[in-house]
Every structure is written in structure tokens, then in C-alpha cells.
Amino acid sequence: MSLNPGAFTAHDQGLASQLGAALRSMRMVDLSPTLERGIPNWPMHPPLVIDKAREVERDGYYCQYLMISEHTGTHVDAPVHFHPDLAMSIDTFPADKLIAPAVLYDFSEHNLQPGDLLTLDMVLAYEEARGVQVGRGEIALVNFGWMQRYWRTDSQSTWFVKNSPGIREDAIIHFKERGIRAIGCDTVACDMAVIDGVGQETTGHTTHWLPNGILIIEMLTNLEKLSLRSLFVATPLKIKEGSGSPIRPLAFCED
Image 1 (cartoon, rainbow, N blue to C red):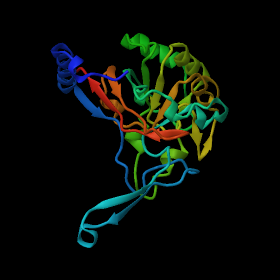
Image 2 (image 1 turned 90 degrees about the vertical axis):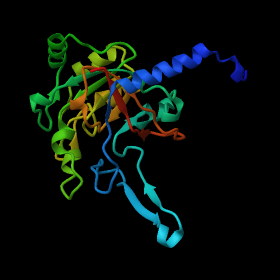
Image 3 (image 1 turned 180 degrees about the vertical axis):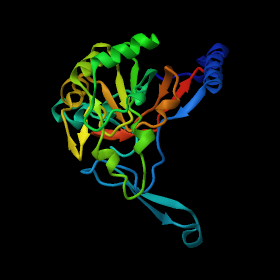
Image 4 (image 1 turned 180 degrees about the horizontal axis):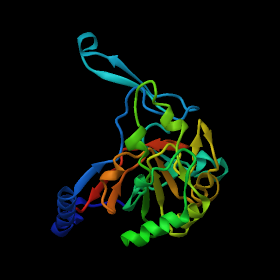
């Protein structure tokens, strides 16, 4: 069935205008770092390559060449990343999968170290103290303070991805049972703690989140700027059989 442009009423156009105005009235936070040479990436993934392929003086126009992994910068993991038998690649999900209300879980003040794990007790205490909890169809955003403290693009950038805290299985299950559609973190592997380049247990990827269609967003930045609740807006590239995709997520906050 084709759409008839004349079928749209003034009321429909008004709703679109109202939505646009509402979004412009909210505080917007960019949750992705700049893609540039030297950014941290998982040691076994290919690095980001940016080359000035065309110059105005030589070619008449300016254009850069990119070579980029599906898991570069802020990105989303699809189930097929760990479960090829499920055939749930990133292109099989609706384009609006990552457009949803989000709840911030900010544990940056706990100063967790590489190998430390966020526990269910910590999550429940946070929810009780702030009177907030993520619900069905929403997105949980976990801030360890890792991006804020350790993200860099110089010769020491790899420390960020070779060391990070993670999330214990009881908390992983808790988020799954809440019925979330996605979870995001400011570390390289979200639930998986990493110590000196060695990844620890990762049951969010292997057992509880990805196999259940819960997408995992990694290497978010500026989470400390969010309100407790926000509207999370992002969409992945439509990559055929993609294990994931870079994204540029935005959060719209009411305060």
C-alpha cells in the first residue's frame, strides 16, 4: 500500500512540529567521542584508519578515506557478534531499536578498578536512593566514569581497553528481567571486566543479553552530564550480516 501525501492532515503536521519543538526545548548531550587517529580500540580489532584521500588543491575537492571496524568508537553489539547461529545481525533489527527512554546508573563515585564488578546490591541501592529504575522497553546506561578518566588518543590509549570494571551476573540478570531493549556503558565491553588485556567472564554477551535480543552499547561518553531519565536516540548503520555498528547516540534531557 502506498502513502498518499494528501492524506496527511494539518493535525499530523502539527504533531511533527510539536515533537520537533519539544526536542529543541530539551538539553541535548552528545554521547560519542570524535572518531580520530589513535582512539582506543579492542586490541584484536583492526584500528581506525583515516586518510585525506582527496585534497582541494590537487583534486578539486576534499574527501577522506575511512577503514573502520564495526566495533569502533561508540558502537552497538548485535547478537550475531557472539552467536552466529541465531542469525540476528544488526541489519535484522528495526531502525528505531535504540530510540527509547533511558535511565542513568552512575557509579563513577565508586571508583571501581580493573576487574571490579558492579553487583546487584549496588544496583538496587542506587535505585532505592534515587527513586528511579529502568523499565520494560527502556535502555539502561551505566557510567563507571571510565571514559571521563581514561579516554585518550596518544601512545597510552590502549590502557583504556586493556583494563576496565564489569558487571556481575546477578546484576546482568536483573537488567534482563526488567525487560530492557538495550544497555550501554562507558567501557570497551560493558559487562566484561578486563585486567591487563585479559577479558573476564562476559555472561551478558554469552548468556543473558545478546541471546535475548538485548543490544549492548559500548564506549559511551559524557554520561556524567545526563539527568536520571532521558530520551536516547541512535540508529546503527544497516550493515548486511553486521556483528554491530558504530553509532552517534544523543540523549535529550528535560532538565
